[in-house]
Image (tube, rainbow, N blue to C red):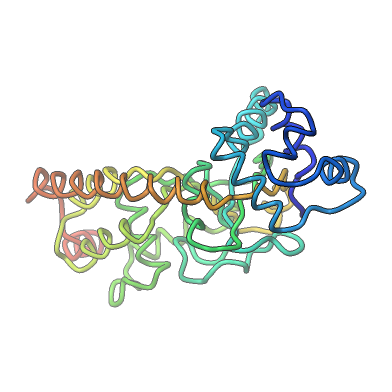
Length: 289
């Protein structure tokens, strides 16, 4: 799917009030070139596309946020859900369940975020990355929802193959059984920082209560994981959105700032809830006892 560059140029010209002559001058091309783009007579080059979106973001026009709000308004009176997918390059062909790594949070599946900024942030270090906006209709499907709790922590550790000797325990078996027949999963996002905290729980360094409060402090938002073909049939790509260098840098800067704040919150939570809750060995022994 190509970018909606023609509509985006028209939007920016409308918002700025620029004539074709002035707009062409602003981004360093001729008026004829602008007219060719708008009429569809000529495709825009990668370099000019980059210049256009870079100019737009630096001008303070947040095209992707505008699109998000418009799509949300369109879906406000329906059961449909707006989701986001950050792609390192692009989506080639139809959506597939096998496009993710097996050791992801919930194994193989198609992963989407509920938050534009988070989805874009995760691919902002890749030079050819882009952002997809998608529409999901959950009607007739079976979903499983996790919060920041013990079950979610154990499932993340299981699918990322970190449980070791605990992977065959009764509690894990019961949790896996709950996913049978599920079409999609809604769960908190587990980035590398969150996984480090879960690792500390699995290694017996912190309790489940400490782990839960530390993870809550990171506050990355939710993800949707589509694990059945019939779920994917109810996901439609609305648009592929361009991520300019300036926009990527903005998201990465925000991530660093949030990381520093969350790091301190995690330290406080770990200290505040010390000696509260149970260690993983106690939990599994209790379940099996």
